[in-house]
Amino acid sequence: RVHEHDWRQSGGPGWNVLLGRLDSFTSSKADAENLPGPFDGLDVLRAKFRNATLDDTTDLVALSGGHTFGRVQCQFVTGRLYNFSGTNQPDPTLDATYRAFLSQRCPRNGDGTSLNDLDPTTPDNFDKNYFTNLEVNRGFLQSDQELKSDPGAAGTTAPIVDRFAGSQEAFFSSFVTSMIKMGNIRPVTDPSQGEVRNRCAFVNSN
Image (cartoon, rainbow, N blue to C red; front, side):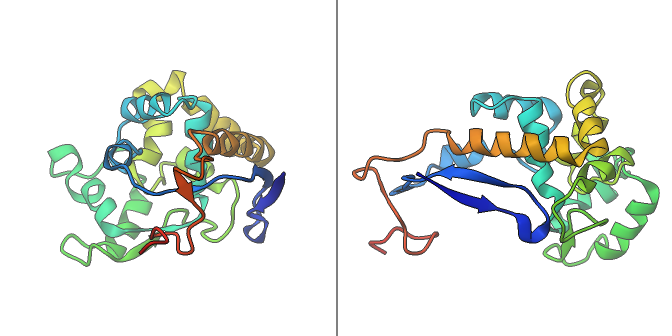
């Protein structure tokens, strides 16, 4: 049995998701710490995807494209604006106009919890503009821009960014494939190991 999961209200693709998945009774701190982080470099991102049995190029780029909408706190970009890698200088890969805009939104001593659009172009639409932003150095998170601007990206992820920036159809197709693959990572199906939670953040006994 399948059920249709779609992002079409925001313009995104739909796909069939297998039923019968359960929520675990426990959480794994180790697994959480191995999730891709906003400050990760390309090598770290690729290793984390490989460790999760995902492709470290196409799956990495396609799933990162989920940042085509959503919002993120200033604290995750202030380093790029004011002290990139301890240099007391901005990230040189950050577009100057976009940097000036973000500096107004996220001043040096401002509120680190203030929210900003991950995609400043079409923030509420699921589309390819996440990738067109990376093409002109307007990725919000370091981990986003690394996919295009890291020197090692030229032979690995940058060509995929280019392809998705040029074809929304190619992005949507790969995103669906990668989402299905991610959904098949160690799913819990044994009722002795999991349940359908009434509230996502809590096991039912709580």
